[in-house]
Image (tube, protein in one colour):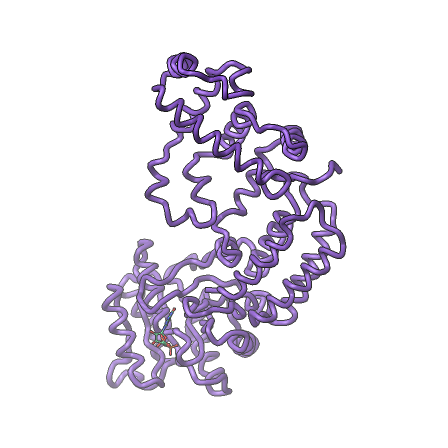
Length: 445
Ligand code: GDP
């Protein structure tokens, strides 16, 4: 999903890494590259323009945080702008005050509408609702049958045309289904309507008639994300011709570019309610703009880390650390302890590590990494004298035994910590002044 864009963006961010501060020229160059990346991802031009204008303004503005280095600042802004164009907070499905809630589905043929009806009904059932699926797609051969199969899998009922009772008239079927839902105590009615290969007058008229007949609480237009920007234009046409209250992105699993997903909210003005990511009924979820933006950036929730770092590392401590590293000073156990405490302020350690890129897949291993490990390390360092913290080389056998005793751990634990620290110290030396610390290399404003 969104592979090309993710790759392009991460390349752009990498270029910013060594920079101490962002000049206007840096911002312009970065904005140009991001603009190209978005255009290549098939994002609609007005969306790209709005995105870039906002990015430039914010990157130049005073809001940039002192706790972040230039690469992090740009990542943060791009992330927030992505969330913005994807719909901000997002919107949940709206339910009728008086059941049944009526949800009308529309979309071009093949967009994934009927599949969505099955997915949505299964999902709603899981939330404790009693949905009724209504087969109003009487145009596509087999659509009614397909809906019945899907409903069987989802474990929900279907209302389909009965012989002699409005056969062939989707508007009548839709109208009758509401009454049927009331009689059978269903609280949600999902109406699957006919799609065409392209938007045409007849389809619009039928959709308008069904809309008038059932007065839906939601009219959801299903967009095949693989089609890209063109799919967004059909949504726009349908919005103008029939009226919609939201969209669902289908086939997001096959969408390598992301153009439809990134354009539809801005272009139609309607929220993305759900995303479909496969052929199976469970390949479906509520659409979360923030999660999607993080996925596009391909950085797990590293952004959350950025935010938390801003809060956890206070300015003084950071300046001190930066000065130290830039000045080529030793990174001591005392500094290590300060950092541990700052990291601990950010929350449970497994959560923090889980947010690092690539660590998300290691959930099981992380679960074992409980916070007591970190508290133990803190206790060990606290049992050392200031001299030992600054110069761990002096920690001989008897000192190790004393420290182990004082912190209630074994000598092996102390050894382990000292070995790890020696490694960390080596690494810090190599990283000094680069990306190592938030704000490293920046002058005080
Ligand atoms: P409709 O004509 O709009 O009702 O479209 P269908 O629901 O029949 O879907 C058309 C095709 O797309 C079917 O082969 C579905 O299995 C497939 N499909 C639907 N949703 C998804 C999805 O999210 N991902 C993938 N990969 N395929 C999907």
